[in-house]
Image 1 (spheres, rainbow, N blue to C red):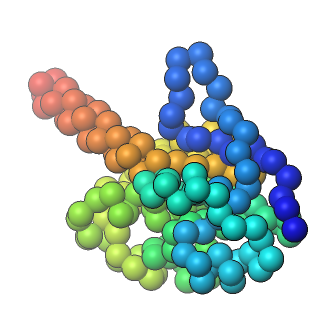
Image 2: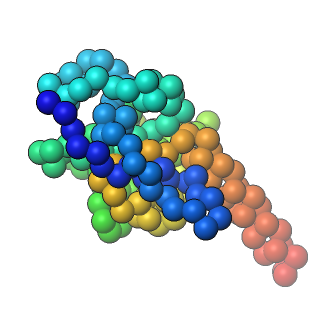
Length: 171
């Protein structure tokens, strides 16, 4: 069984005037662990060499049955019955996905969710991350580098630092 080519969007690696999309095989976005790959895609082709070398990437794709797959586990649940998911509009599922992407990039853990612990900062930034990064991806598959997520968080820290200084000086 072979998969047709699909468009995999590389989120956060835009070049000035460049397009976000690039042709890539669907199996490049399959889960990393052999067990989870066997469970989620019985009969799917083996991963390509490019997928194995993309250790710093997080991936998402929709299989032929319409099920969403990620190459990382959901560790934070805002609500016990709501899994992370890519949705075309802002939703609890998308916000949960954002929190599961942002949490491993931070050290502070001061917000207890229904399942798991994250930070208040991540909780505050999740909807903005959805709007700026996740909702802009329109394809059925995407890849995002962990370094891009870290850079996005760092830029928010710099932006917040500047706004606090501006608020103090105006007092």
